[in-house]
Length: 302
Image (tube, rainbow, N blue to C red; front, side):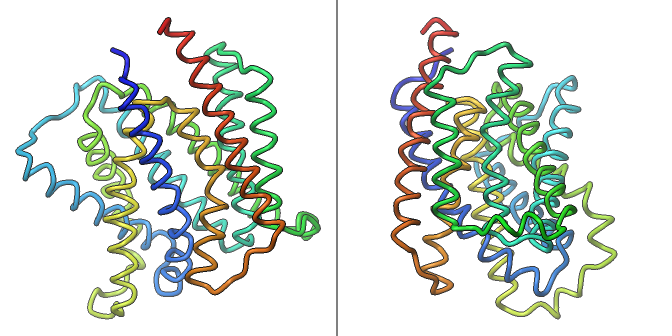
């Protein structure tokens, strides 16, 4: 069954909102790792998100579950989307500047289009290719990164960052295969699986909860409820409505939201070149999303 125009518009609006949350997530994650290891921070984020969504399911009296044949797919989504991706992202922050990391993560939609071309034989037109190149160029302007740092021997950080790119693409396409399930149920079970898998690792280094400062509680509650729970539901909903590649393309807007959050919360400044880059990213991203939507409609005969 095709999605209505209003549902598609709603998905895009929610993704714009989510991109702003993603930008702020870098700020709180940096502060959170002052007190917790990446494993512990990720486990706290996932656990709180799962609890929040579990409460929603109880309120809704939702007892839905998955068909047995889909359980391995749900576990795979948990591993690639909630564990490996964020493990790579959090650990890459230890090796690379956030500016360079967000440039590398901008290859998510580019790889997504390539996967669709190679695996699913879905062609991308010239406008999509030009749009993706425009997104990456705009991101370079926004971040203003010095590419000489590519030669400073941070190979481990680069490999970890590209691992995140690969994991997120795998997660996108796996989740797309589960589009028949309710977004909240899908998010809840994926987060729960991820939390159970991470539990043994987190217990080894998790400090006593009584030792957590109030600021750390605020950080993990925000990351768990807003980004892991609400954000995860939004993203799963968007994948189901607009598809994995258009949803992935929104990651190209993340450096713009990160720059805005940097100005508001870290008192950073935005240069005229970054403003120009932001405009390029938004315009190019819009072109890619629009053209990909047209190709998907033609493919589905809508």
